[in-house]
Image (cartoon, rainbow, N blue to C red):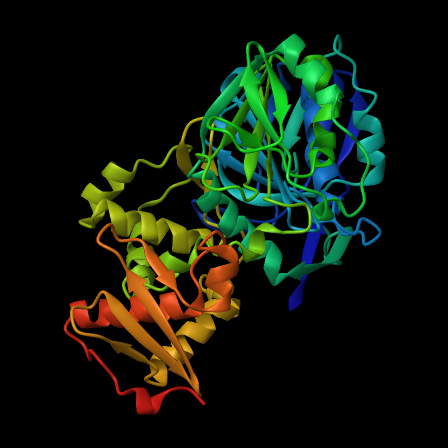
Length: 470
C-alpha cells in the first residue's frame, strides 16, 4: 500500500484553558487553505458553543474514529481531524485507519454564538491531554471555542512548537473521494426518537475483531424503532459491522433523534449506510463501508467519472466557481459553467478525488472543502483506471457493429462487454462475475467507455485487436 508522510505543524497543542472569563477550547490549526490562499495557521471562528457538553462529546467521537482501526484493530493509526468553515457552520471530519468508517460533525449556526464563521479548510490538533479535558466538560459551564490561534505573535524564528508526522496512505485519499459518491446514492430510510435511538444503539455489540467474516446484518423500520432482519427486504438498511457505531455511544445522552440513510435494496449483497445523531445545534454522522473488512477506497464509484476525457478540464472550470459553499447547487453550477448537469456531477466527482468535495446526506447536497491533496493523485494511483488506460493505449478494445458489444483482447484472453437497451453494462470477466458492478466497473468496461467516448468526440474509433496488450 503506497503512502507518503504528511506533516502537521502547530503553534501550540490544542487545549482546554481556564481563564478569568471561564473555560476556553482552543483548537490549533495547521496548513490550511482560505479564500486568500494558503495559510500556515488559519483562524476560522472565535465565540461560544451553545451546548458545550454535547459538542465536547461529539468532538471526541470524531477523534475516536480518527484513532481507530475497526478491522485488524491491533494496527493503530491516527490522522488529525479536518475542519472546514463554510460561512454558516463548522464541519469536523475524520476517517478510520482501516478506511471503513467516515465521521463528520456539523456544528450549525444554532450551535455557535460568536463572531462570523470564516471560510476554509485545515487540520486541527487533537492530543491525549485535550481528549481527557473534553471528557470533563460539564453542561452548565460556558465554553469559549477558538478554531485557530488567538494570537500569532508567539511564533518564533525556530518555527512551530508542535510537529507531527503521520503516514498518509493513498487509500485514505481514495476513501474520502468514494464516500461522497456512495452517500449521494442514499435516501432517508428511518428516523427514531431520542428514546428509541438510545435503546437501539445501546443494544448493539461493542466488540471488535474481524467482523468482516460475519454475514451482513440488516435492519428495517418497525413502528417507532428498528428491528433486525435476516434478509434485505424492501426498505431495509444494511448494518455492516454494528460495533463500528461505537463512537456514537459518547453522545447518546444528548441525542434528540437518530436518522438512518442507505441506498435502495438491490440484490442480497452488503451495502454502505449512514447513521446520523441529531444533537442540539449539531449533527454527528458515521458512514459505514459495506463490510468491516472492506474499506471505501476500493469501491470504485468514482471510476466512471474519472474515465471520461472531459472530466479534468471540466473539474478545473467548476473548481474556479467554488467558494466553500455549505450547499453546492448542481443546476446553478451548470448555468454558470455552461456544462450539462451530468458533466458537472462528473467534475465534482473528480474534484472529490482531490478532497475538494464532500456530501451531506442530511441536506442531500455536496459541499466544498479543500484538503491538501493534489488533483489527480488518487486517479493516478487507481489500479483499475491505470489498467483501463493501458488497454486503450495498446489497442486492446474493438467495438463491434452497432456498438452495443465490444471485445477486449489481452494476450490470449478475450472479454466481451455488452450494453443493453437500458444502458446497463456487463462483462464476461471474473471481476464482473464476482461483484456485478457492486464495486464499480471493471477495467474492461472502463476501457470500452473510453473508446466509445473517443468515437463520439470524432477521434479514432476501432483499433485492431492485434495491438492488444502484452
